[in-house]
Length: 77
Image 1 (cartoon, rainbow, N blue to C red):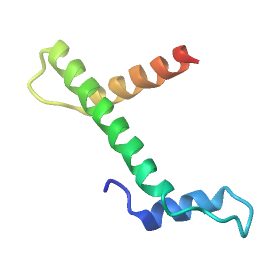
Image 2 (cartoon, rainbow, N blue to C red):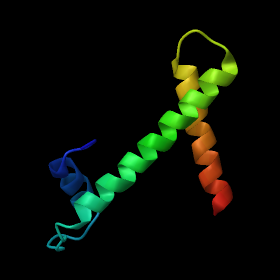
Image 3 (cartoon, rainbow, N blue to C red):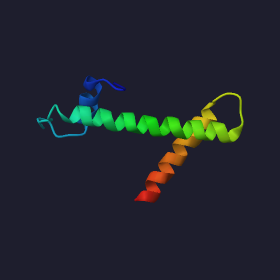
C-alpha cells in the first residue's frame, strides 16, 4: 500500500463533518486509484527522461512529468 489505511482515514475525516460514517470498503478503492496515479507518474517520468537524453533522472524530470499530468487532467475537464 502506498499510503496506510490509517493515514487515508485521518486525511479523509479532516474534510468531513464529525460523526460521518465511512465505509471500510472505500479504502481499497482509494488505494487502487493511488496506484494507478503512481503508475501514470512513473510512465511520464520515464518518457520525459528518455526524451531528454540525460544520464540520470532529476527533480526537473519529475516536475515536468507532474506538470504534464496536471495539465492533461485540466484539459479533460
